[in-house]
Image (tube, rainbow, N blue to C red; front, side, top):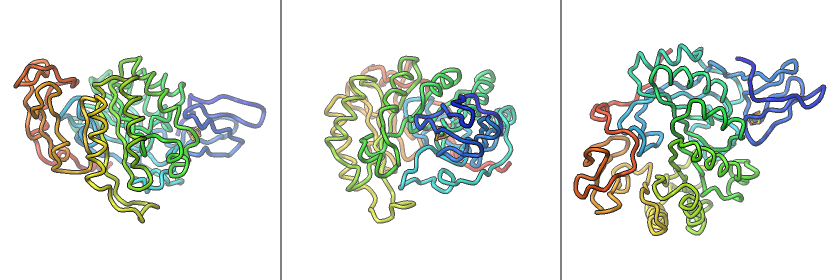
Length: 352
Ligand code: SF4
């Protein structure tokens, strides 16, 4: 644990956390909504600083990133706690845990571990990294110095103060909207009052040239409206641009939402069509191994330029500057194919 940076004193009795838009006001001994930031003696302590509960090596495609450093390996960490309370969370065992737990991995040790395992970067993932922003920041700054990149897998629900810290070290982010980012869905199923800060986070990261990918979990019956999808895609198109990849993810029943089925493939394909028809160039379906829409198709000639199966890359038809081998169109991907993509067993747990 360590004293947080993002907080301020409000009065004699209370302090206010500034890490996420909940802006929790905490009296002595109180812990914020996320369960990891506590007022102790008038100071805000980050209880999970240097204490990840999950440490894995993953392919970057698992995050998912399809247009950032393809084929690379990321040391992935997450802590307990979260600033959302999604009823369908697939990592609820750690994100909704309200007892601090984990292994001891201070920033320097974590970066050394990444280097030891030949990782290309570090992913802050599994739970919402904004709640442990100071730990991510200190690790990320060190990691960058050692030649590693840093990526966030996030709900985008960050305060401007957190986003400012991200700019010191973050290279790429994948923001998961869930239910098309609609207020009524997020209020009911994630205890989020207002999704507006997500859009503000994206705009600021875009202004600062951080690579962005969007995911949207399509929950059948309650979060699968095509009109909502159209609204979200239009916003992306108008504000982030036609080259931003969007991944529509298949929902699996989990946690408190066991009563719903997995998302029908036809529903996901309808979302794909909405995004493509609007003009987004790179649209994907996720959690559907073997589906043709896991792959990248050239927006110009329509040929498959990156073939994928699950998290594996099994075809690469890009030549210099990531141009389509068939027609020369430049595909908007950061980095070229990392040869690690050719290895099997690209993900495993690390025992500390
Ligand atoms: S990060 Fe946690 S403590 Fe801080 S405002 Fe958000 S929920 Fe509250």
